Picture 1 (cartoon, helix red, strand yellow):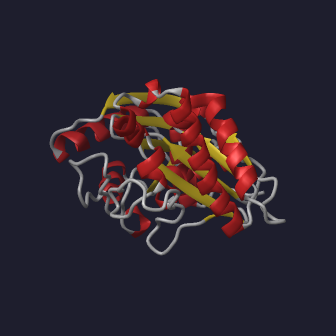
Picture 2 (picture 1 turned 135 degrees about the vertical axis):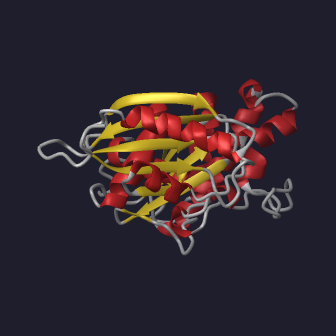
Picture 3 (picture 1 turned 120 degrees about the horizontal axis):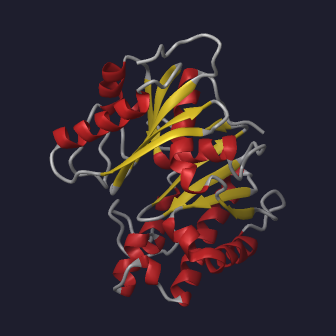
Length: 299
């Protein structure tokens, strides 16, 4: 393997996106360019098989990678503070799994782990639709709903690293039960999982009225965050949000306009994420660079 700390070359990180259906690893430079990418299906069986798949991917990316300074990981939660122990709801094989420590020991470099939606927030501020903006919300509307918040150019972590969980903002009092134990959460009403349960078919086949309804509920949640935190931009990614297209965005914006009426929140906008399919890897890379002290989101 090439010297990971070589002089005269721009630093790079190994980025790892841990998803319920696929694992993706990439080599990303300090300009956000993805130099190499490998993908595998997420094993649904034993923790050891899952770990072996992860190591195969990162080893393939690390081969002759140059000056790699860190590993950055975006994964579903929950996780303990600092991403030390991982228990993704969408990966039953891992409960309290020490991915951060295991990756660091395996590759011999520092590893940094964060929630995938917070990683998205970093990536969108670095290379995406929130570039140059100091205060914004980034969110994923997909199988589930997650979010990350940047205020004053700094990603908000929270006491245990779980800040920004917009999926559990209540948008329908006495609404559908949520797996968190509450009722009427955005995730219970507008996620891909919820849409499939409501309509009896995959979210991608949802009728127009359900797409409009989903956008409206997302706009309602964004308005609450804009009113609470004095911000005017929400960047939205995920298979539901992007797959539903303009119908979703228009409905979300209309509800945001209706519900964000304070002087400082009026005019808040919802925009599609700018990193596209590269978002998960760019976000994971931003987690790695941030941990190493090389990248911060700023306005």
